[in-house]
Image (tube, rainbow, N blue to C red):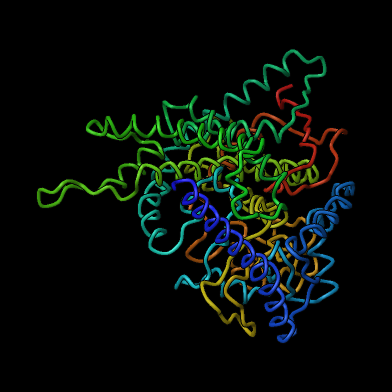
Length: 522
């Protein structure tokens, strides 16, 4: 009797699964996208037609592959046809805004700064982060960058003290010390060079340097374990880039494919490494959590005992692990590319390299800089901001409405996503002027709010309540490293360099940035 019962149960489960799969295929992959497309057309919003399951993904993949061989002149900063050829083509073809499809999800690409402000500066949680690619989630965790609502409030309460300016000033010494080790290595290499010049692959060197900095400032004595986190995240990033345009089929992430097994292994390595570091700190909390970023965060995570009751832990251990993933990845990835593109621009525009060197020697002398000295580097700040405008490491911001929502004259249905293409907005000539495609740090002479025709035009660190909490950390680190390089070396691009910016989750030189360094005392 048992066997027939088991067969009946299995048959019922199979029928239920088939029914749900059919419902998913018909409703989500066919009927709903076409209904949404019709709603947008009725509002005058057009775009490429929806294709079953894949949406516009194959068109995007094809256009990006065709554009991949394009090389630019060194002073040509309009790399949009290289990295986002689909957005450039569709804007020209359909106007603004337009809709395209990431699988079955409609994405509305907006180019109006007023609409951008309404989305990013909204204080009521009407526009939340879009669904995250599973490998990105494994890589950076569901930390402050990705959580919303009351969870964001909890996370912000814990993370905010770690990035207070007084804490950051104390970390300047660590940043300088890490940069000093790299510069000493370069000086030693130059000593043994007949020409006294050396060639370095700066993109790789800057990633290693910023990983050292975040390892030391975040985890202190657990520096080597921090480097393990760096290498695991780089491998997860490579998987993300390779699978970014793949349609996420429900349940597929649980199948033991070769790629999924690799992702699970790296995710477990990340979790286990961070868990060891955190548990060690928690176990010794009676003697203090430490003065690094993790220590400050843990201090804020445990509320003080009140009324004789045991202190409440604001975040769980898993949530603390996610925060560590987030600030570790953001702390090295974006800063390293900001440094890389700044070195590129200073190589292409040697007059600005000399201006910054004169400013550094005037304000910092030839010794190691401190936070107060770095705060006086006005022209360096201008150059870094202009680099963020032309070569922002983050290419897109994605949001989605929590329900059917009105945005300007648009009626956005729940389930749609809003795409904010940062490099395209940063080249809007109506906002930035006729020379929007040119490198001109002087536009920031009077600060960010007066650099363009509207005060919120620079989106490199986002705007509004969800703006980047680590922007002061990034700017302080970039200034520390640049100041020390300018004190010791002049530099030019290697003849090997090919100007081909690439979308590798962040904006990076496709084949690295080979730089020729010449010691100033040679």
